[in-house]
Length: 368
Image 1: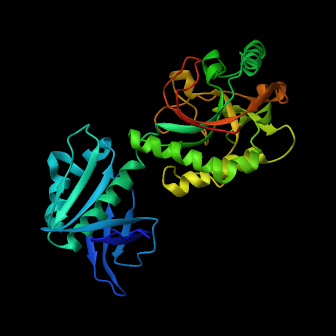
Image 2 (image 1 turned 90 degrees about the vertical axis):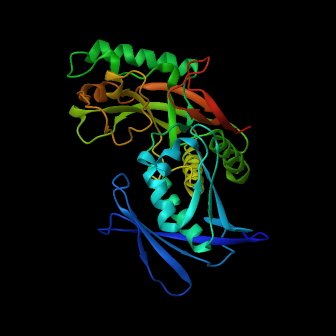
């Protein structure tokens, strides 16, 4: 139950639409719905329709609270400071338009200062409308932010690193004449890992929310799957991402449970499912593709580039020079990188390093 004394709870439901509108459009609705807001933004690439109404106060998932005050009504929105600019707009135009069209006043903290955006107005409907539009804007622009963190299993144990360096040496010795193959393609051995999913966490509160969710996952299902013990995993064999081995962008090492079970896959899939449901992660795949990138053409131009977003082997920001991986795939099809005990899931920070050379950790879920 989301209701509280002196407040009214508004429930919202979103319906993606392909419409031609390029501004806010109000529709008259029946059956208790108060308004529909259609917003099209160039960055969002599509229209989003929000139906807003009093609804059923027993829906806690995506409800917000409108409080009645002496001067009318108000609603508070927790927004990370990097997103303020999207509500303000160029020269304050977006904020002014929102205030004018909804007859509200929108108070935004100073840039870089974490806090709440406060919407006030004499009419409850205006406050609801402004809040809904802000939610649509934030959702659209948040999806365009580069990811800041990712859930990972570290594979940088000394024995794995040693075998990886052996793999690199042998590939360069036997395949360096193949088109595009060079030492710059190889992963940093200290950063070998499995990525479960990526997140956009824009302030300490969001990072803490992710950490708290990790602990709830441990209690809800991880302990039951792992039995409170590390998972023994073998890293062996190589495979490529795209359809043509002569035009490879990402080559990865395959991983599987030593006991033949699917417990690692279960942990990965259920963690991602829970993070997607919380809104902290976007759903990209039906199931997590467990793999450890060992070669990536993104590294050729920028050695600091992570491989976390290379599931498709594509990059929208860099022109990639593919390499011919046919011989590597034949010669190293069954290369054994080693065995590793996975005992934790890490909330890793992108573009960072700790004392071991691995990514800095913002939080973790320990199996034992």
